[in-house]
Image (cartoon, rainbow, N blue to C red):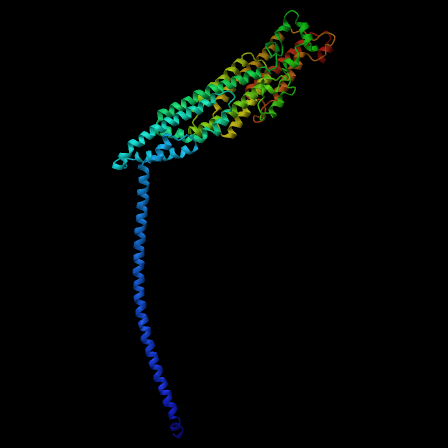
Length: 476
């Protein structure tokens, strides 16, 4: 008890401290309560501000959308003085394309049915129509002027097309949409111009190459058995042929043997022959000139077809290309028909067939089919002629057997006969030129070659029977 009484002042001090602490805690409680009320009020204000902000953002988006629509509408119907001046007075160049594109958008806009009901559109429509007529007139004159430049001598047509006309391909689209009659007029002028230019240039080229062709073309006398051998003096002419006293091969070329003529099949991708670069009296077989014709025609046709597709937006249609290139392809077909009428060179004909086949595959790789009908027509002309020439060779053998073709001169009764040599050379040449895709000669050539083989065997037996000695006949 005495200790407790002695510690009483400390207990009293502790009690006072506890009371002071309670007062402080009570004060903090009141302060925190005030903070809680303030925070609740701030939270309500924040939610209110968020709602206001969302509402203002929505209003802003709506106003911006309305501003954009109004701006687009105003721009589509209002014709500025600057646009009028640019369309009517400015020089037509690449910058003019932007002005024409702007006018095109305005015209397309006012054509919409819902726009025509608005007074503002109705007010600007006459002015836009006036600008349309002016733009059509200026664009037409510009395109006709550029097309007329294609008529100038020594003009590189492809460069002018690609570097000038293609840049203004939007002009043809504008005319087609806003004045189809003028668009057809411009297109027809282009067709007439280019058809005449291509025909003229290819005629000139073909004419220049004709001077490089071998002077003497094979004739009907160059069959396996010539009809001249059966006439008076035939034996002498036969001996001359055997001894080489015929027309110089440098002027006539080889008719039956290849003698390197098949080298052309490895040069089908080479550039066409240019006449003025061959003034050293080098002469060419007809198939070499034919290859140059077809190579140049194929490249030119490919370039023209792709240009028409891009400039006039033909979308792969061949109609416009046929109008432009029809006269040129017909010229080549007529020239081929004229050549084939007097052609007796079976090796050359088969080489021409191989050339046409190669260029058809080349066009297929390019995925350009504009010359398919032309190449088909060539095949339908060359193949029957080749078969006819081979059949005529068979008939010449048959006639020789029936008319007792004389044997070789008695001094060398066992030498190979000229007919035998010719047949061997011709058969070897035709088989060497057989198409690898077919795996040999085509069916339309197999039959005349088999008949030719049979007739040669029959002729050799008939000639051998006329020799004085039986042993000589057996050896022959």
